Length: 92
Length: 432
Image 1 (cartoon, one colour):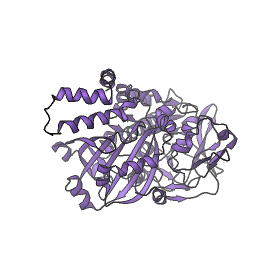
Image 2 (image 1 turned 90 degrees about the vertical axis):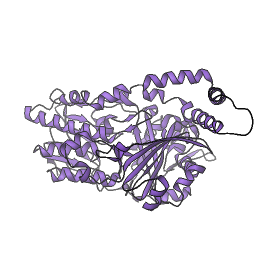
Image 3 (image 1 turned 120 degrees about the horizontal axis):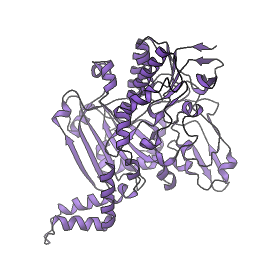
Image 4 (image 1 turned 90 degrees about the horizontal axis):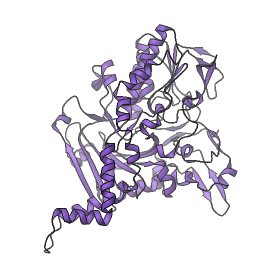
């Protein structure tokens, strides 16, 4: 099965306003960054060259893995999307 | 605009809808608040809906009423390595006769149905409403506020049924501010479309029969396991990982899922299917030691929000515990309304009823299972040992044979080590 395809099969109603907001300075100083590999939706990516974390909330499955895995509490906001927005499962 | 109710339930999953249903049937004016555009939109689970004692009491025809998929007649465990697997299955005549032992279901259908039953009983369902805080009056919880809406909802009691991360319980000061990754797991799942006849033929099923299988050894050493469940015309296939282990592994859930689906024996089972949906959800796997404060002044905590999930490694239960805790919470609120006391004392019958039920009793009984399951050898060395032992047993190549005991000890020595085998066996026996 093609991994890139996996993400295209889930439906979302994307909110322009992000429900998760990071303080990237905390990520830069982090010694673990378990969020990058643990997030099932690949929302987090770390650039070794730029020493910079990038986060995209678009494909977030709202599972909470990052919330639990981040031991530095890098979130200035972590809540679920506004009502009606975010992931919409049909038959799981 | 603010509105007042006799009770507010946060979250229309199995716990919340069961609570709302119970209260509405007793004539209480209940608000059931859900962040999805319909109940079940945000929910996924691995697997199997087991017997639902509390809902079966409310609906004697529960099993005809609820939207179910196949009933499970065959349950299996597979020990898997990169290219081998050793499986055991139990298929029982009793599993094929009512009352059935378990069903596969789709959460977006099941959760929606249960919430609709609560609405039919008189509850007010408010969808597209994300609760972001509790409202306090005179030191006790008296309502909730909703993201992006100016008004608040008021009630003398709030039932927190908002799932594993329960921000409602956190804001009320009932759960700790942070979670321990060692007590949490994440499940990822691929829903794979497959014609009904193909599923029947491939897994040896007829009529509405279903098959449920768990896998160990399919996570490249990350603590966790896999599952495969048959729906009418689709398969639910996925993996579950302990977060403390996944976090330090450097491996990603989707690559591991891909590798699982491509493992030679697994690939044959999903071959011909088409990927429909990918989903992920957290599971509170800390057991009894993870349970937060269940009762506060004007608030009760139920379901996943209360960590009511029993993951012993053999069975995985959650919805049945959630639903039962919801019904019991509803009953406690009804009693509190009669007495006019919504303090933690007035609501304390909730905790007492739970302690007398299978919910707390089972969690207590398997209290040590989460620790036992933190043994990394279960997820790689033991599956390798089982597969190599079975492979050698059936190997006939013209050389003189060894006794079965010798062969077992050889595999055990090679893959695990005898001392560790003894210690692990003892630890498993103690926790199960």
